[in-house]
Image (cartoon, rainbow, N blue to C red):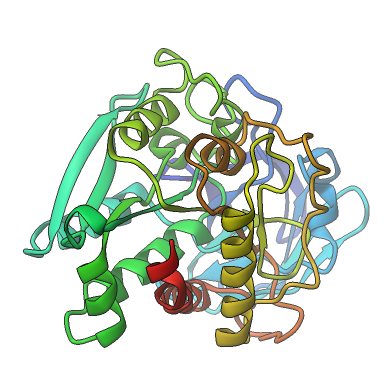
Length: 375
């Protein structure tokens, strides 16, 4: 059995054989960082063999609790990703699989490559409703793409921001973005026609192109966690946030969502801005209304499980959601999706998946439509 990861988004290190059809692996750390959890590799030459793949440094990863009740995703065609039996013994992550073809890919979650990102941008760019901006370049020289769409409704139009994949290993965020754009650019959809007549959308589908291509979990090419520098981004080390923030300051923000994935919690949920210094009643009321509306519209979303709320005055303005809510006085939020499955509605073959991520994005637009007039 041969193991390789020298491709877009790949990450694994081969430690050696562990017996017949067994192999010992380790996840590589993000460059200039101690974060690691994301893996993506290809196995060749194990057709119809009972394979046992051991990831030996799983307990040292960023979120070891995420391995409990978790199953790895696999694919033969890199289009359909299904779950395979996986164990966590407190030290190693153990993948047990009998491949049906000569080549199989394994990953933490269905990958979203920079090539697919390029296709997403190309597809959007030929739509007459859309403007594509390169707001800056990453440290590796990749474009930081922003999609603009919507007539804006004149001076009264709302300015809606969606950003995703600050943490590159959270690939469900860009699948979500694909679902968002699929629906937002459907001119036959009455909900999106209404939204586009009232708002201008600013969408950054991938905030961290370097980390995505390099196969990082959480950081950019300089080892910076982008979601911890929003209060004072450095153009030299965190240009992704620096340029996103500059454009927010230039254009304004009336509603903001930052899309992520959570390794441990098997639920979809929102995290808000309850601890910011200048919180106001209107933005908090709109956030709670949005959260309740999304829970009513989407069976995949819930409000019972999530992160603890910050106590008043204790927020971390280094984080995107808190900084945006504080700076613009608007409803801002972090959407978290699971790497595992939605425990409230499990699907054993695929778990939480790209398609379910995309469907959740469509419901997020439905929820926005119900409150956009009050932003």
